[in-house]
Amino acid sequence: MNTCTIFAPAKVNLFLEILNKRKDGYHNIRTIFQTINLFDILYLKESSSGIKLHCTDSSIPNDNRNLAYKSAKLLINKLKIKRGVSILLEKNIPVGAGLGGGSSDAAAVFHGLNKMWELGLNNNELINMARDIGADVPFFITGGTALGSGIGDKLKKLKEMPESFFILVKPDFNISTEFAYNLVDKNKKTKNKLTINGYYNKILNSFKKGDIKAIAGNLYNDFEDVIFEKKPVLTAIKEMLIKTGGIGALMTGSGSAVYAIVESQKEALRIQKQMRKNVPWVYISRVQNSYA
Image (cartoon, rainbow, N blue to C red; front, side):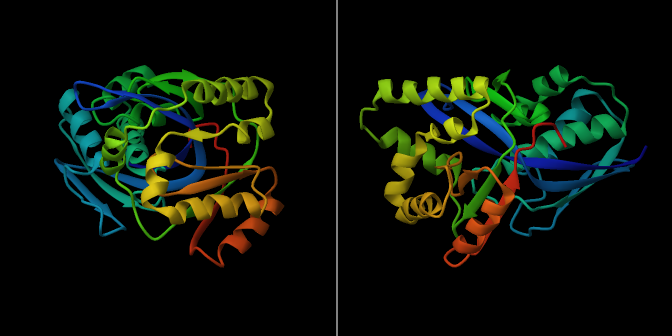
């Protein structure tokens, strides 16, 4: 096989707590990841040598700054492969939205090259390589529903999220993860640990019961306090999503996308129509429990 097409799913965070800053500059967190069926598409084609990457979004770098490029380079070097690859990245997941597109693209390259070159690497081997690329990349090797700890790279599978729909809303600005963490580090407010633990324990119990309303009612993200202060439009979007019928709403990752959970596609379509009067990018997605 000398070609491969692979779909890279987006993710949302259903819970995200920032615990502390580490000596290496990263932050320890605890989070709940969930993949959704919004996809970038990667077309891989074997070449004689080297790595070439072209992206349909011209604002995205096509060199070693790109995580998909880094994945290909790492795998080729680590396994001493004497072949190259050409990658066409069809970008559908918004950049700077907290939806994990770059990390998912990186994981997709690992999967795609493993399949195309019949390398026989298992998920644990791919996850170990993924840790060298970025904090969220290991999660995207398996996707689904997972509890993340450490910098997000220590993973424990959770019971699958019940079938449900997400209305994703992205305003016309991006937020970099570095910017968001810098705001958190400068913020000296004391967090109510008891309240946060309450959300955490309740949402975990909700997964055990398969109760989507309870899951939606216990969403939490530490980034919201500092980001909403800088970008009040995100507060307005979240409030609007609840007002129009979302059973729970949250900013994902470090933003700028905000989502609401609803139980039916009919309800999602109704809310999407309402939200599009105010924000241009409103996308309906649903739970994606298996890797695409």
